[in-house]
Amino acid sequence: MNALLKIVTLLNWIIIALLTFVVIAETLNPTKGGDAAGRGIGQALYYGAIMLLVVLLILNLLPFQATKYLAFLLLAIPLLWFKIIGPKLNEMKRQAAARAEEARPIFPDPELDRICRAFRDGDVQQFGELLRQSGGRFNEDGKLLTYTISDASGAPYKPEEKRACVRLLLESGARLASTEQPGDTPAYIHTAMCGDLPLLRLLFEHGANANAYQPHLEYAILFEAVGAHTEPEAVVRFLLEKGADPNATAVFDAENGPITPLWRAAKLERWGVCAALLEKGADPDYKVAGLPPFRQYVEEKTRDFSGSGYATVEDVERLKKRLR
Image (cartoon, rainbow, N blue to C red):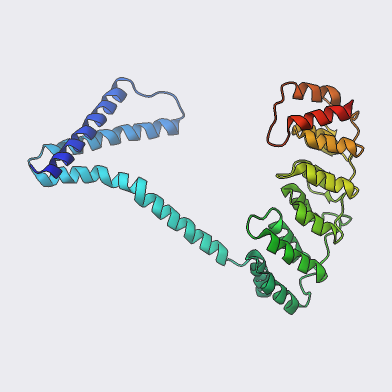
């Protein structure tokens, strides 16, 4: 018997021994519990292991070298599939899906689609040229502006170029959505949520409203800033400087009823944001159903506070000093 055949045979019998142990263990002590589907899968695996064990035994006991190699292949092919072939195929499918998604029109209008693709690629020059060629045709319905602002907000890819495109669009005559129109949600609500301060500054240069309202979720933009993904305190301070109402109210939990941005920040444990709101006139005596007074709430929540992703011990000290 050559060396390769010895190795193959040894590996086959190791797998046979392991399968035998698993089958005997499951036979003597069947797995219980779980739902019907889980038990069905378990039984299928059990009987599958028995069938594989029988096939491997037969192939390895036959007096032919070829059957031993065949047994090894039966074991190696699933391993190769799950470790190499399967992941490679999944990656190819993912890439194909990404290419298909990229090729799909962003908007049905071919001209608008070309402008949006230039924006998505961060090609400021092409975006500007296509915008000039359109003659302001896409400034009226706001779709282009909404798309660009939403995509540029917190964009990881070419954020400066995308902001430059938004600026070109605004300078070409596009107008930010009015919060006075029923059902109209300004795109820059999303900008505040992302915590994209540079883009927010640009939008406020062109008429953004510090008290813009999200009519579907029924709260002001300041609440989005309080829960911003990045730089929440900086975004909150910016909106407050622009005139945002620190005592606006909104309902996030029916049990508590209306709360203010200060209470929203406290429930999210963003203590620096709380301090910033208090500095600009937030009312610490606003009562919320089912919760203790604000000062007591802060004391209870910060008793063992040692810092988190959105607040530091220094933030807590600033807040408590402000409350005093």
